[in-house]
Image 1: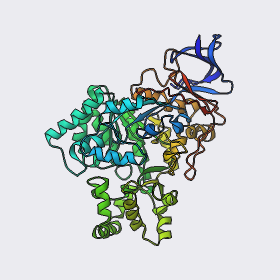
Image 2: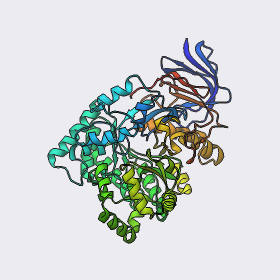
Image 3: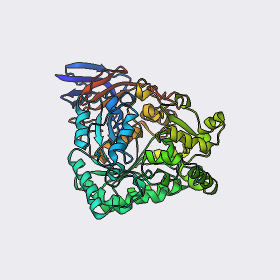
Image 4: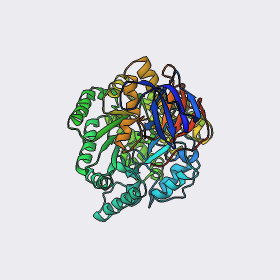
Length: 527
């Protein structure tokens, strides 16, 4: 007897072939049968007439490492159809924690009320496993955490002994379940690392068949050079490369898109093991402190706040703002302070959703002085949404065959501590947005192309055998959706809103979303 029989749905296999009508039977966590008329009995029978049946969506770029410890039901992701999240991106993972990285980890975890009780990757993953999670998790090892633990958060270069120590931490984390190395070379302390340092660490993950995923050094003025560096690291370390949330920021850089596409085409022609992921929005989300020169963030969050309290230094930054505006624009990417919106500020909920320009005007301050004060009041952890990109370029990049869909978001929920900020709508709407806006409405992609970008492309890149496809013997990670109604509802002003059109989500052969409602089943695994 089957555990689940999905009857009469339009099956999209995940590898790009045309949809076909069939029954799909599930047993013991796997797809047992695909047939026009399965005719077998099942414990659960689902009438899928009018629905499409696809592999569960794989999010190759997620930041749910910490939120999953608060929200094990993974509501904002599972309700999009996401069954697997790749976490530990942009150089920031919850483990391994040594040295100064322990204090930094505690600061970040305190925002959501989680106590850091682990140190190693293995200990962190054990906490995820007990009592369980609703989605599958693929953990990456964050370079910023490794570097911060061994070298601290200063602008320094490693001695040979320190390089060996970093490589040893990476090796231990890989042996305990890590699947690759991520960098956030745009952020300190990763920003201070040389290419050779990263190559050394990437070689270690290569020994274990891992992947190198990178938030590259620049996504604006030097975006082409930054992507070239990522490709160089992959080539010299002999590891596959994933370029995270590919984009071009800053209106004066939009003409670089043709050269970026040419780089992608060249990589594809050479059959290099490289991929890109993208979220389907024109706004980014990050820490407000990224607007400041990198030297202001040397030493970590506490050192940053101390500097912002220095009147002489603030005056120096004001002069730098006037004299080197292009450098500031390169970091933050917005046309003016109206395009920078506060998204997370626990002590001042009245500021959520307001722009820096609005806050400055209401408080009678200069916008840059407002930024300094907000950083002080938030202890360096204020988050913001930055409108930096072109819709046309988003659409153009989406169509490239090397670009997969990823959220750059977390598993959130509307209530509790995770619902207290104006989160980016990508946390709730990434995958339905592609299916609704870019497939059904604008026809930027076909349905089969979009599903491939959400499933098998990322499964192949991250070595997830038996995931991301519908075929007999594959894992039963499945999503059933209505192609006529699926859509994102979350907005920048009301982000904590679940999408429409996602009827069922099955993880490892167990129903987690049933008729659009969460069953409470924690069916996910650490992969």
